Every structure is written in structure tokens, then in C-alpha cells.
View 1 (cartoon, helix red, strand yellow):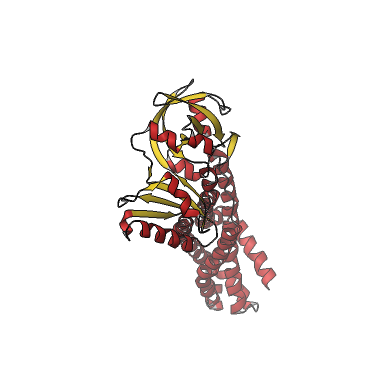
View 2 (view 1 turned 120 degrees about the vertical axis):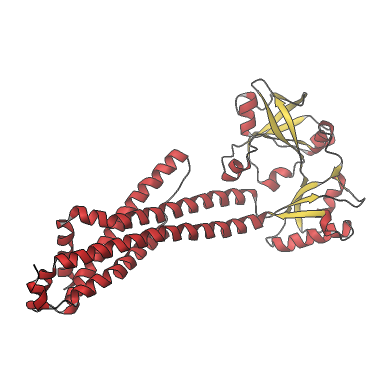
Length: 391
């Protein structure tokens, strides 16, 4: 019975190709909206999450606004790692400088720090080396630049050994970082970065002194809440229990916040796309009601030769379901094409999520059954005598 109903449904759909296609259009648009939007959100989330994880989830950043007469000196930083809670620590004083080289002149973000900064921040070198303790002790005018800065100022990334000037002072490039095309880097806007010894930045910038007002640490364990609590207690003890004297930024909280935001965004976009599917379902119901009216005589003949109410209802319900599923599969095919095109044009890697594809199919099945039930039931209730008289 089911196989016969499927054959009849397919025959009916093929006999009215244009009408069937227009009926499917609402489902196609709804599925494309759902699959493409959610896949793009998932792809962007994955890219941002990878960028955050690359920086490390064991990172804590501290900013001091009031030292209460007990400033943190460069030589005091090692005391924070004495109890084993923290693995590495490095100052992170940031200033803006005008960089000039053989190729161009640009405004750059200049960070004064120490050797530990490389591992704490998860930076990767393309060539050369990072800062070392002798550079700090000797106030050496050496610099590590990122790939964007090397390209803009020197004209190429193999810039180790070249000279660059910050606010007129010459610095020797000792290292170039790997190119960073992550989402986090793109959103930050400051893509031209350089790293020099903290002591060298003191001489270069009037806003930086031996009093460290910003530093970052990496926790030894995985319990970031415990590490943050320990660091907070150490700073409270130093700054007379004044919670407003400093602020601590927990890197792991960014990933958690990002998961929450993107989860909410996926639900929102999925809900909007779901409305399109509901509209498509209404279109299916309307066209099925028209089909029931057009085929009233056929229904009468089937009932006259012994077809029961369930058989008639099943025929029209299966037809509505097939229309919905065909629209869904067409929508998935279009979605795959759109996502691949966006990946190529946008130079990003987006994938068709299997989970969202299955959700689309399940939703389309539900739409087909829900909106096909009323027309099918109406067809099944028709009086065979009146149906046979229908012209």
C-alpha cells in the first residue's frame, strides 16, 4: 500500500512540475537559510575558537591602576612564580611608535616585554629568534616583528638582519613571527606589531617606566579559576586589599563567552530560518488542498472500488511528505554550493555540518506531515457518492 501510494504521489508531482517546484520553493529557501547561516556561524566560531586556543587557555593578564606605593618592579615579577601556581610571567607594556624602514613608514603597536612572552602568548617564529635575557640586561635595540610589519616596512618577510627605526631610533630585526591570519587578529585591527626588550621601551617611551603596570602569566595547571583566585589574593595582599587597584583578565573566559554568544546566535538564526520553513509548509498545505479539490473524482473512484479512509489519507500525506523532502534535498544541494563558493571567495574554510543537515531533514519531514495532515484528512473524509458526482 505504501509503495503504491509513493508511486501515485510521484506521478502526481511529475504531472504538475512547475506547480510542484513553486510549492517546494518555500522549503528550499528555508533549508538554504537554515543550513548556510548556521554553517557560517559554526565556521566562524571554529576559527575564533582555534585562535583563542592558539593563544592558550592558561593565560591571565593583569593591569594595575593603583600600586598604593608598592609598585611592581621588573625584578619583582619572578616572585609570582615561586609557589608553583604560575609557570611563566612577562611584562607587557604597550606603546605606539612610528616605524620606518627601507620600504615605508607606518604607525605600529610596540610591546616591551621579556623572553617568556613568546611562550605565554603562543607566538610562533618564522625566522630568527625571540628576545633573550641579555637583550633585557643590556637594553639592546633589537626587535621581533610580525609578518605584516616586515612586509609593510621592509618589503618582505625575510627581514632578519635588517634595520628598522622606531621614532627615529634604529633597531636590529632579530626575528620575524609567522603570519597570523586568524579571526582574532583580523578583528583587533592592530596588525602591525613589534616586540622589543622592556628596558629598551623605557628609553623609547615616556609612558613606560620600571614600575610594571601590565603583565601576563601562564598557569601551571588546568584549573584557571583557582589560578585566578591565587593571583588575586597575591595582588590584594600587596595592594592593601584594594580590589579596584588592579584587574585580571582570564583568557579561558573568552572561550566560554564565545561559546555562549555563538550558541545564542545559532539559535536565533535557526529560528529565523525555521520561520521560512513554516511558510514553506503553509505553501504545501495550500497546494495540497487545491490538489484534493482537483482530484475529488479520483478519490470517489478509489473509494468506490474499496479504498479505505486510511489509504486515501496515506496517499495525500505521502505526497506532501515527498514534496517537502524533495525541497529539502534541493535546498541542501544549493546550500553546499553556496558554502563552497563562500569558502573560496572569502579564503576561509566553511563546512556543511552533518548535524544541521540532519536537523533540516527532520524539520522538513515534520513540516510535510504537519501541513499535509489536514489536506489528507479532508480527502479521506469525502463522501464517495458526492465525490463521484464532482466535475
